[in-house]
Length: 99
Image 1 (cartoon, one colour):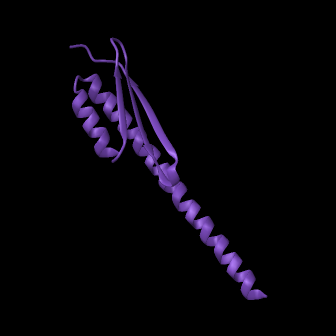
Image 2 (tube, one colour; image 1 turned 90 degrees about the horizontal axis):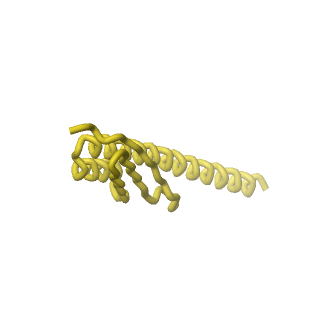
Image 3 (tube, one colour; image 1 turned 30 degrees about the vertical axis):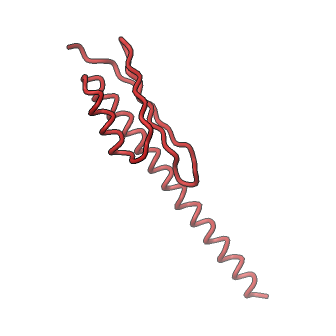
């Protein structure tokens, strides 16, 4: 009887640890998406859109980077599938620097 209870407890503990590790990985990837979006927006505001997209894909491997440049605003969206297929996304905005 105690063996069955121990097996259930160990299984529950392992499941909780697995979920915790995947949750931590998802939070880390979300932070990377935010960093990548911010860096891409900053570089695009300086007039280096190609470098901004490259930097974002280096920061978050396998990410989809969308840069929307308008006359008075720059919007960058970085999205990716995270652990367990969770959709992760971050946005950053910048104002173009005068030339």
